[in-house]
Length: 242
Image 1 (cartoon, helix red, strand yellow):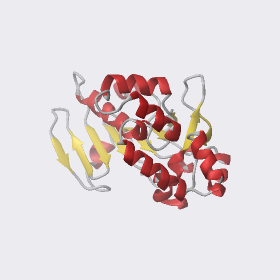
Image 2 (cartoon, one colour):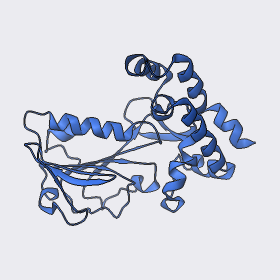
Image 3 (spheres, one colour):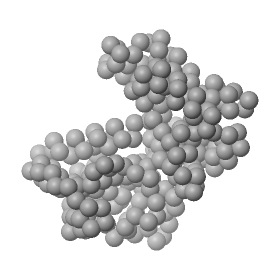
């Protein structure tokens, strides 16, 4: 957590991109909790679905208006700006606060060049292994999710924790069917061929429904860089081809 603990770290912005259901929002919640429990918490500006506000160092929460509130705080390197939304190049590059963004896999996240004065670092959230899911299940979900159910849903969704542990079996199966029906074979070929990233014109609905069956692959050396994309499971692949 050097990025949020030390203002002198060179990157001004970290964008964490990941497949649907891998735990990006939960991770952002963990980061928020971590920051608030520091001996000297920073001022935090939080931008999530349904809320935009400031959390002061003493824990006081103040709601604001996106685009106009907390401009002073966002101009300070000492502030931490936490965001959970689709990343675009329209975000105000004048924000100097240390920024952590959770984003679905859009092409824009990789478009950083010499003009990127904020020195953006893009990382990819890996999918969960079956062993990691089982450890999580036995530790946190043993009363609600059986090992048999986990294995059954893993055959559909692969390492997406939301759909294997965080959703009822009936809903997970229903959402899997809906996703299959929403994703054409040609779309799979296009997105996988593009490394799992999608253009913004596909729209949030495509990302949230059909494209959640496509998982981003992360490099094996733990630098969390994108290496490509695959379907979430052999079951999804077989049904998409039909």
